[in-house]
Image (cartoon, rainbow, N blue to C red; front, side, top):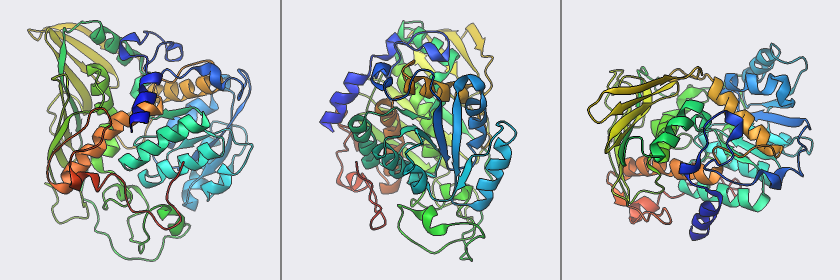
Length: 452
């Protein structure tokens, strides 16, 4: 962990140095691995052969960056364990490209193909780190959707593997590539609201009732064994393979914190310029549709305290759509001389008296609380990854930085699961609680344990 911390310090140039402007000119971004180290792998004008792993609700966000001619991308494979997902993805991409990528069930076959340069990983949470580690070992660059890991142990492995194999690993927290967010972060760090001392990150949704799990024959076209992959084996239940795996226990998902809080907690941490907290406490419970199949909390208020007397709160309401903060998701940053509201489409700057000083609505369009989606931010974030692979850019969300934001998700989930808060070593990220540390990793199916 100390080695990881040293590594993070080396690759981080400091959030105060973030430049203002287009997505592709982040010369002094917070994730400062030198792009020159990759330029000998993919030439500046060479085609990049890409495969997409996981063809669910994030797929539409990849149409534009892959199909736009100037990006010079060849989509080699579309991979999913469900046949209908593969076929639908192929039909949808046919609207954007004039060739047919191969449709594949088993991601291991794609990773073994030496012609594939890079993978875009949108597999379920339990698959994301293990499959990314396989890809890195095989010499592939990785675009890794959030949450980048299922647990803290996997975060360690990701950082170690990126360093060992020297590949470009971008975490899919796409607001890091948002022009208006970059602009206001730079202003905050230059003192526009005085000294920032608190941030409230929030998500407000109105998810409905979730079916109870029922034993059933495996769905036609589904490779259930491969869906489970690294997770312990169990019998198939009727609603699991699709989106509801998020809510059916901890074998596959990371709850709403992993599903959505990752984004806004990352913005909060970026604004306050903090790394690991020194303490985490949560109040969380299932409060809606008490007899349905949802097995985790659907309401959470988490508090993260940091060593510089700053605090971040996460207010997650999955199934109560009351608009507390003036938007379905976003982050509010409080400072000694003013405040900022920022979400995916705008920021609003207030003075200390609450008067609006600047209302900057971005021209960008990015999905908010709706399932799936994509938009300008996703496109810019993926293109930033392409540019860095070619040696023409610098990552806006290097994995060594991304895992620190991801840690806050894991801390909140662990606090809920053990029903108590705990102190944290802000230098190493380790928790000063035996019960909490018991959840540092997870049980894996025999033979599927992830390694670097």
